Image (cartoon, rainbow, N blue to C red; front, side):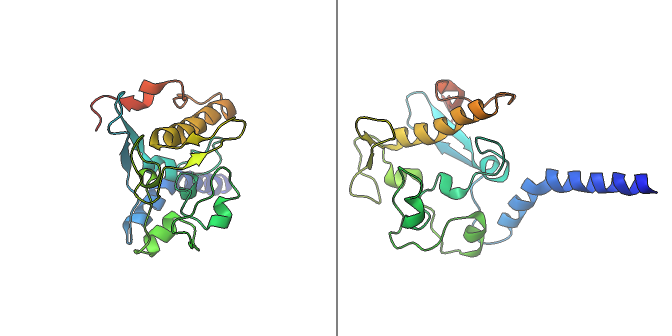
Length: 193
């Protein structure tokens, strides 16, 4: 009888863990706004567009160290109060400037008025004006001699490529490993857009 109880507990634990991403996704689909499953980035890039599986990054343990889901504000860094954003240099901007909430999937689901600022709203293509700012931000990265104009290409490569590089360093046993910042065509695919 004890063996049966232990086996039942093990199976139940396995089902709970393996279905956690689905439960989160199902809850998001029930009301409010639902984060997109896939986003096509860099639609006009010379190397081709990037098909980004947004849903996997927010429902699976995809942080560099593999211990938790990626929080919305790790990419949508303006979606938190400015005081919180400033704790994570080089970020310092909140949108709107008087923002008091921090974007989460739960907030998005509950508050249908919540607006999600997308990367290109602030990080415009080179030689273009961003939608929400008077100009594309220039950021002095740690260890850099000069500021970098953080256009959309720079922002994506630093954020996405940097996280992938960190994941490879932190979890060398990942199979397959995420594409690093040096493997452009692993993400960029002609004809994806």
